[in-house]
Length: 225
Image (cartoon, rainbow, N blue to C red):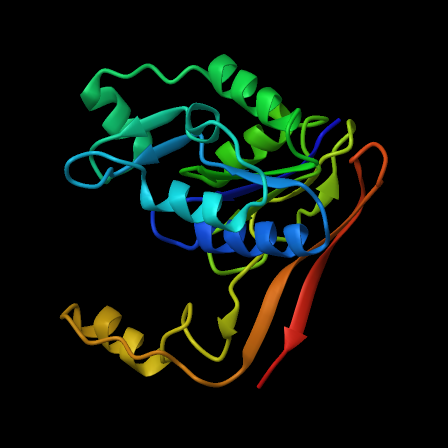
């Protein structure tokens, strides 16, 4: 099995690519041949070209791989990929994505996949779909760490949300009183970032160096301030 990390999230712009880039840089610094993959990218620059997320993943990697494998589907409109694909008449083929992933695995020791998932069940489903193909499937977006971390039967670690890195004395990162005013009075209020109770949240995955299969996964919490 190739060593792979699958980063998922339930919205656009929630930090999947930021997390993937950090992972790729760390793995590359450790001396592993590492490449990033974004199966479906929505929102190409005006006039065409490479999606910014795809470019960021490539800049962090230390393996040069064909764009068609790193980003099999590039969609014009910046919106939820499955909706854009339907509007643009593009049929997204999971077999084609799996084939591109397999080709990347011949070039790199580690493949980090940046992927959009709408709900928790989709992230769980993708974990089972990729079981045995990647070392980990790690989800993001809800801001709250889930207690469902586990290693699936074929050696893929799964956690549907690794949580928010930021202030936990807050309402998902914002000062509580500001958010409560908005809820109670049903009128717009400016949000202000909170500053207390800062924590780093994530997951630690132990993987076998030879097979690439996950041996264990545990939630990570570091109190910062």
